Length: 268
Image 1 (cartoon, helix red, strand yellow):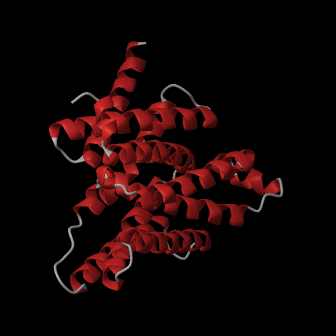
Image 2 (cartoon, helix red, strand yellow):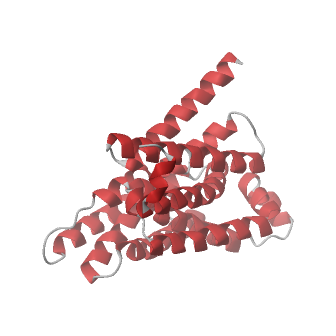
């Protein structure tokens, strides 16, 4: 089937819209994550959110809502413990990561009735995105975009020189807590696209691909959004044609684009 013919289907229109919104949000938040070298912290938050999925199933509430609450708590806890130097950073991440996964599995199996199919949460399924999901994604995309536009220079200082930010009178602690909450919410809503296992790729691969061609923070954001959207649309179409998982196909496409970028840089 031709690509544009797919827009006759509601599920594809929803998936296309989700791909665009996710690309914008992950492009912005992912650039901050990579600049701050918070990739592994984000990985801990991602896997910890599975605890919220399990609790959501157990309590009969939307699993994504449970994941959002759990991810925000995990993010704030990680940020707090890291700053207080209670434990080494890698130890905090490992504990958060493993505890979240363990809680999720326990509560899923404690849920009465048949055990739910967790494949869409682990590996993503963009074609199952609903109108309600899109509304939440629109709200998050608007919030993230406006926040970064309003505090762009402040975020720039925090990303590269936190001590300098303090000398400028910037409320560093408050900004860090607000940003880590946005990171957590972005991760949770991206789970619908790529799943818990693969979502970290959406927050790092487009940024590293864009970074091959520019070192400017703003340039990486724009490049990441474009690369993320193109790879999502291509991956979505290929997954539909070949009848393979969409999340994994999108990530595979992202890796191919990154390797192509490296090749272009090498040849040039």
